[in-house]
Image (cartoon, helix red, strand yellow):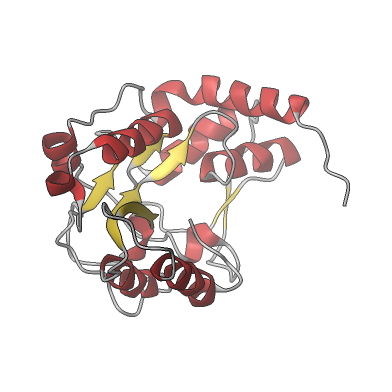
Length: 234
């Protein structure tokens, strides 16, 4: 979750509002969501909860916000860092960006050809939220959890599968990184995460196959959601 226009201000306003809530005998549980893209290019093959981000990475500031969230005294904070989400309507998913590129007839990949990311089906992520909500305080309070499936595909392979699922039969163009293109700026590095802590402490596990195994169904769900959506008048 990220306010792309006011990175720091929006979250800090939320923290202030939480601190000002009337106290309760049992403190509220606050689940703060960042993501596996806060790290940047670090010399760690698989990222766990002890890994610290490259301070020069554009999203590294979110680590500071995590610390602020964990320091709140009026709530008990848990931090979740999901991998790349897919499934259902695909809102804000890189996978559906690639579906849309394929339908426009011009898919472009601007990142390193060898990078890869951990992915997570949105329903598996929802299950993790449920488990965190219901967990005993000693299991989750003040903790950080990484959430991703065990598949670790190359991102270019996922893009190829996405554009093929959308019926595109041409070539993918390769270009240099571009400002405003998140894949080539924020996500242009390996982002493989370990979810061992979530499995052991929460009893969490993935129930869905990976993005490569389900890409056709993911595309069909995205198309169905587009057909059923109703434009909002402004």
